[in-house]
Amino acid sequence: MSEAERQVPMPKQPPEERIHNFKEVALGYTEEMARREAERCLQCKNPRCVEGCPVGVDIPGFIRLIVEGKYAEAAEKIREKNALPAITGRVCPQEVQCQAKCVRGIKGEPIAIGRLERFVADWEMKHGRRPPKKAKPTGKRVAVIGSGPAGLTCAAELARLGHEVEIFEALHKPGGVLMYGIPEFRLPKRIVEEEVKYVESLGVKIHLNAIIGKLYTIDELFKMGFDAIFIATGAGLPRFLGIPGENLNGIYSANEFLIRTNLMKAYLFPEYDTPIHVGRRVAVIGGGNVAMDAARCALRLGAEEVYVIYRRSRAEMPARAEEVENAEEEGVKFIFLANPVRFIGDERGFVREVECIRMRLGEPDETGRRRPIPIEGSEFRIKVDTVIVAIGQVPNPIIQKTTEGLKTGWRNTIVVDEETMQTSIEGVYAGGDVVSGAATVISAMGAGKRAAKAIHQYLMSKR
Image (cartoon, rainbow, N blue to C red; front, side, top):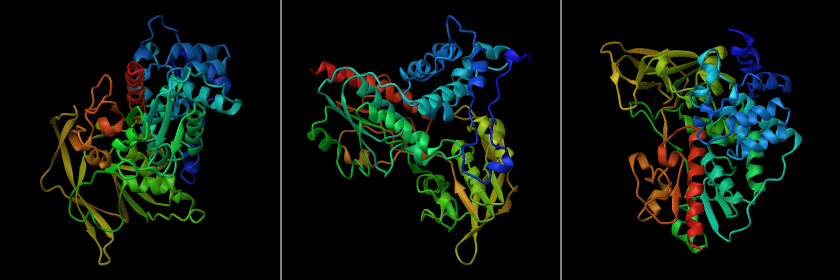
């Protein structure tokens, strides 16, 4: 490929160094790198890349401003549609969204849109943000439940439209899955904290340690004077395999493992008093981004061997290709077409082996991926000290169980109108993983934007 057809590569920490620290792996573009990559953009008259962005960022517009060296203006252009660019520039799966639509990708590599977005957002953080623009106060109050990507996005949009917004967060730090679910080496906590500060700069108030359904109910929030409510509580309840031995010591859900590692800083023990033991051999069950995060954390916490056991082939893995490649570079070993059937413990009740069965792929299932089918008599065992189950999460049903008339669906999800995100209760909206089940950060943000638009229309119709 010619230089114009090839992406400017992003520098990374070498694998042999990064497996011993929790510092960010991808180091970001320099100004010179960003300008070179931005100059590859064809500035299409009908930009297909924008169609692939769930929040509708004017991608050619901000890239053109990078070429002109107008980085502050580029940041403003992105924030017209995206309140969290430093986050999405790092964790958004651009390769299957905006970059998948890029015309440059027809012959050569698509524009590295995510890397450019990250560059602009980081430049803005370093050099200072311009004061955000807001509409005049409307006198309307909105409660947002959850401070993850959907909640932060909805809150920011509504605040810019002039509404008074308060976020209620169950944990002791704002950010939701951005803070507790994604490791420091992929999304530094300071980045999340800076983006939360931006949302607060719009006038949004955040209440921590506030579990709605326990502290207050939906009805009580309305009685407190809120005119509308947006539920964005995510999918924080882990799923398990339901096989023998799953209650043995040394078996974690990925949720617990990552919360202890990320939010409670187990990787800094004993400076922080939240230890977590991994032992020499770790098996991670699953093939998504959460599984990759757990496997890579286990390596950094001292494991000598880390296995990812996935019941389909590599081609069916839902994890981002970049994260799989990073894990391989760092020494994670993959066992494809295998599924655990039981865990075997020692006399003290600690897991010591995982017994798996080989699988073959049949016809596609409801997800469009080929269904894994066990091969009789193909069982084998792997010695382990720790197992991390990363096969997905579902919404926690606290709000659903304490709110009369709230229609729910599959696995505790909240049923909404897909266009407006309105629930079965007037004035109550929901979006993100609590509606869709576990999905991407950017899809949750898209839901938050749709909800904000509908909530604004609803509030203005009641004047």
